[in-house]
Amino acid sequence: TKLLSNSGEVSTTEALGGKEAVALYFSAHWCPPCRGFTPKLAEWYSKSLQAKGLEVVFVSSVRDEASFQEYFGEQPWLALPFADRAQKDALSSKLKVQGIPTVVILDADGKVITKDGRSAIAADPEGEDFPWTPK
Image 1: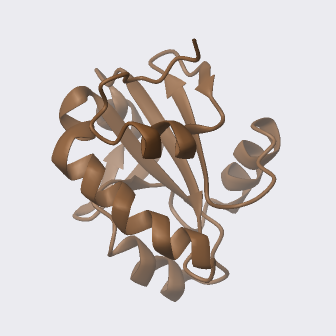
Image 2: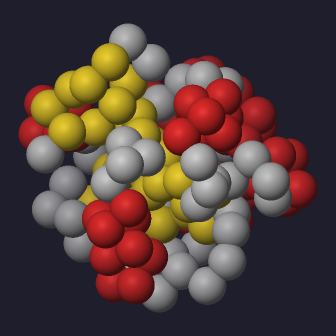
């Protein structure tokens, strides 16, 4: 029911209302590919994708609250609270997340658009084909 922004807790309904798509970003600071992808995703999000109607929600695979806070502090979007491990595990299981970084893009109704959002966004960082519905 709550997500985190860099300024505190926000209602999930309010934060995601009106968004055309939501990218669930499964990541962790200890993962080298994640450390490389996160700054790029942040740049693309801030430059183009947020304005197109994309919201990103960080779903953390870090091991402790301090690491979560440090890594999330580098990100310009929302996050599932670190303490909500049951929800993180449920999302990972339901979406069959096998490794990180993984970006799963959902439509406004919560239906999966693509489980390969990382490749879709990296190939189209300005969002010309947003929300990257597979052809």
